[in-house]
Amino acid sequence: MESTVSMDMLVSLCKRRGFIYQSSEIYGGLASAWDYGPMGVELKNRVQNFWWREMTQLHDNIVGLDASILMHPRVWEASGHVENFTDPLVDCKKCKQRFRADQIPEDNMQTHTCPDCGGELTDPRQFNLMFRTHLGPVESDGSLVYLRPETAQGIYVNFKNVVQTARMRVPFGIAQVGKAFRNEITTKNFIFRTCEFEQMEMQFFIHPSEDEKYFEQWKQERFEFYTKMGIRASRLRFHQHGPDELAHYAKIAFDIQYEFPFGWKELEGIHNRTDYDLRRHMEYSKKDLTYLDDLREGERYIPYVIETSAGLTRTVLTVLADAYDEDEVEGEKRVVLRLHPELAPITVGVFPLVKKDGLAELAQEVEQDLRQDFATFYDQGGAIGRRYRRQDEIGTPFGVTIDYQSKEDRTVTLRYRDTMEQVRVPIAELCDRIRRAIREYRRTG
Ligand code: GAP
Image (tube, rainbow, N blue to C red; front, side):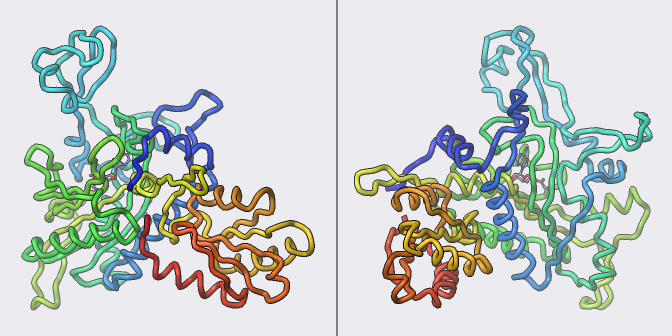
């Protein structure tokens, strides 16, 4: 039986075990801003690394980039964000609450009444989602800059640089992970929608005639990425954007959705952005961003772009929600995070059965050795069952226990988180056994 997790359970686990805390908590918190604690930062880094390896190391035609968050303000005029990156907002004249018009039930919009208090609503007004700030000490129009609302533009403005310096030939991709900012009105459901978040984006540059082929290819590949990461396929699906959902740059778009505790929601967008962005940057910068294709008899054209755009912080929420499970061990409830071993903040917990008789020393020796290859955690306090349980709760996939027999024959017990199976393994073979188990990991439970 699959157990389902409520958001309250997840938020509480994240706080209790050091994954995610509310930002500025000692000052009462800041709405929609969150901090990643010792376990959370490890998990987030591992999700990022999983994506990065998948996109760059496993594709010989994709390279990386790390562009700055602040860019020339003309970038956002060219990209269409100054003009189009808006939400229609309505205010309640009575309770002063602000809503996104497209998220208010149809009935309330027709009667112009607030869904919360029944008060009168204003007409919708367009509100730009970009955060604005100023470069330098003087706040004038000339110093206005934006916090980027997507990482993608950093890739487009470097298209020529990458072609020339990394000698990439179409078709090729550029991958990037980084912060993005949107002044979102509806910021609820924990880290699902926040004003400051991280994206993992890849722009794939292609010949215009091949857009349908590559769109389909990336759609499938990105779906499989999540199942590879251990996410249940039954909780993933595609959603095609209708004409009124399409972003201003997209010809066709599909979301990969996940069934969160609060319903099916977007996890990643795959967009055919055509030559929209490069063409606009050519117009606004007056620089030639065309590509000379020596494989197509010197044809010169503006490449089309297939974009895969995932939220890193949203993927962290997905991974946590999907991994959360509860079962019973010897009549006691066990909370277990069934994380893919490559994502777990700690890979191996090491425990001496007791502290005395030289077991702690041997356990420390084993831990020091494992530490060279894996993230380890040493714990010698309390009943062994409780120590296992603490590691299960943060998703540690392997436990190594050192007992009296270990002193005699240098073997230890290796315990698997998901099955709770325990096997006897020579200390000399531990590293290999764990490495193999990670490689061959298939989700159970
Ligand atoms: N470059 C294209 C782009 O930004 P998007 O559909 O607006 O497309 C892509 O965003 C992904 O970024 C989303 O699927 C989601 O995972 C993540 N994302 C967008 N807004 C977010 C927010 N306010 N908080 C957290 N993640 C967000």
